[in-house]
Amino acid sequence: MTGVSTGGSFDGDAPTGQMLVDDRFTAVAAKFFSIFRRPRAGGGAFAVFLDGEPVLDIWAGWADTDRRWRADTMALSYSTSKGVAATVVNRLADRGILDYDTPVAEYWPEFAANGKGDITLRDVLRHRAGVQRMRGLLDDPEDLLDHDKVAAAIAEQAPDPLRHKASGYHGLNFGTIVAEIAQRATGRPFTDLVRTELAEPLGDNDFHFGVAPRHRHRVARLSPGLSIGKVPFDRWVGLGSRIRALDSARSAIYDGWTEMSIGDRPYDAMMPGWNGVFTARALAKMYGALANDGMVGHRRLLRRETTDLIAQMPPNSRYDYVLGGPPHFALGYHRAIVGASLTRKAFGHFGIGGSGGIAMPSVGVGIGFVTNHLGYPVMTLGDARLPLLAAMTQRAARAAQGGVAQHRPAAAAS
Image 1 (cartoon, rainbow, N blue to C red):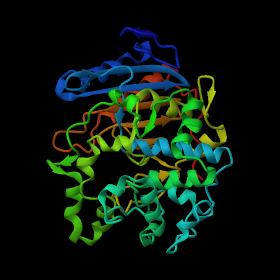
Image 2 (image 1 turned 180 degrees about the vertical axis):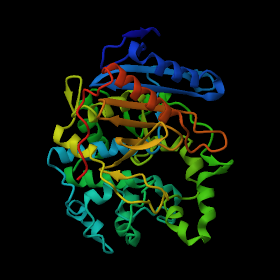
Image 3 (image 1 turned 45 degrees about the horizontal axis):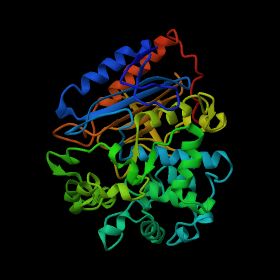
Image 4 (image 1 turned 60 degrees about the vertical axis):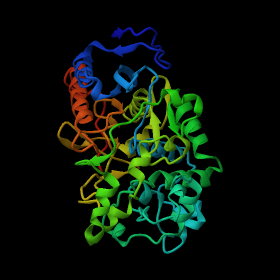
């Protein structure tokens, strides 16, 4: 392995300033560094675990106009958060505290209101609960950052009948729902569960839903705003208000969210569907465990039976009535885009703007990517950086294993 010195050391669990580049992944590292050559490209970090061990841990560029990206820099990563929140829930299921096929109302009785009594935890994780609505959910927009108020309003909703036909992406409130279920089942705050069910088993504390003041200096500033053709994303979705087919998509986003999400207010909230702040290293370690029978290094996150279940990624629906495409959700993750393909051999969760985490069980690879530069100039919602790096990483992993995957294939879908 090659260590790229930046004034510290890497001990496998607690990097303090030294990059890690395994010789077998130098081409991937070179591509990553080329992405952030210019200050206008912002900054980012990329990390890879192979067979439970770190092989890449690199960063480059600028965290802000006057601040370079460092070993401990982290970024708000939008829907990348959903995969992290889902992993907490899957660990609770792994330990028998939650059951996928139990109605949500058995953990959260108020959720049964308005015909939701038969909706299960599995339905929630597959985005088939039908309660994606956030627009008009509460009178005061400030209350949309209050977990308790949002959870209470969700519990009162009637479900969208389209949920019986397809998934409907719960873009802003997926994390609220799973966090409330976890809190009701355990009697503990979700942030405590993130610590005990994820951070402590993995030996990495950089999973933040709400950032403590002592860590705020580590957060990269996001730019530019989320937009399509310079029209803010939430306003663009609102343009479909008179098109009935877009009603569900419009309902999942509220006016003002785009501008608010790139400011400082999300760091005070706990909205696990979109306001997670992570390092690439933490994401790669988590997905590295999911890709390696639940193990990373000497640490066990999940039983092999649970990672097998997660890796099945059964078909969900031909389309999603919010997104309009087929992401194929299962147990809180979706099929990953690797290169130009939405593949059944990899799963994870992407975040709007370009961040994300991916597990590739067939080659034992876990990937994490975070950035503060959101998408392309003409459409900042996402880009090809992570899919490209993922494809290069997959090829490097196969070459490292002699062209034949040493990991067993992901379990076949039932």
